[in-house]
Length: 180
Image 1 (cartoon, rainbow, N blue to C red):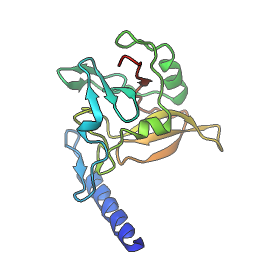
Image 2 (cartoon, helix red, strand yellow; image 1 turned 120 degrees about the vertical axis):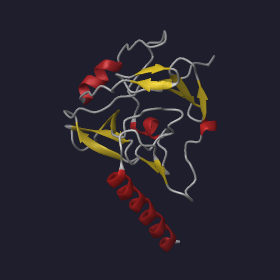
Image 3 (cartoon, rainbow, N blue to C red; image 1 turned 30 degrees about the vertical axis):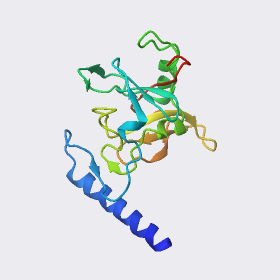
Image 4 (cartoon, rainbow, N blue to C red; image 1 turned 180 degrees about the vertical axis):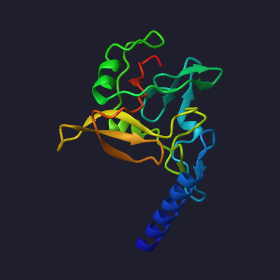
C-alpha cells in the first residue's frame, strides 16, 4: 500500500513539473490519467447568472474571480488582486445578483472546488472558466503567525500560508438559501 501511494505521488509530482514547464496562458488543464476526477460536472448546478452551486456542500460560488465578468458562459477580463485585509473588506456587503450574503470562503469551503487530478488550473474549467492558475485567498488566518493566512493554489490544488500583505486572487461564496 505504501509503495502504491509513493508511486501515485510520484506521478502527480511528475505531472506538476511537466505542467509547469509546458504551460501556456490559454492552455487547457493537464489531468493525470488513472486518478478519478474530484469535481465532476454532476456535483454542480449551473446557474445562468454567473453563480454555480456545489451540490454536496450547498455552497454557491461566483463562477469568475473578482475583476472578471461572466458573459456567454465565459469569464471575461483580468482578475483583480487583493491583500488579505482588502479581500475581507471587499466581501462585507458585496452586492452580486441581488444578494449581499457573499463572503470570503474559508480554506475548507474553497477546497471543495479543487480538481485534484488536474494542474494549471486545478479546477473544473466548465464550472469555473478562465480561472487564473494561481493563489486565491481564504478567510482562514494562520493560528501560529498573525501575519499569514491560508490560500488555495489553483496551479496545483494545494493549500498554503501566505503573507497577508501579498496580492492574491479572490472568489466569493455564499450559503444556498432554502429555496435555492
